[in-house]
Image (cartoon, rainbow, N blue to C red; front, side):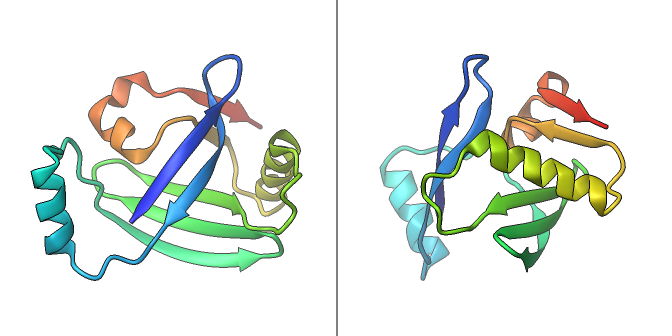
Length: 126
């Protein structure tokens, strides 16, 4: 199970998150807990993910059903005083060096993209 606490900039765009993860032993038990808490499913993200590490980064290639393919890069280094904007620029430079082509950054997650496909927030780096 994963919870992301997003931090946003002055324009309301997410630029990094605190991520909390744990192993779930029973999907059925989690569904029961969510049901008792009155949680309702609003989007199902069906994805296949392949993961690699490179230096201080985890690189994931996601194939998301009914959306597209995505590259996600996450800083996994141990320096807690790192500047998120500097790290983002390093990630963009890395993608350019490996020839990813046009880089489109979205500021929302897969559930949002599935629910509101016309309202995506994209920044393009070339």
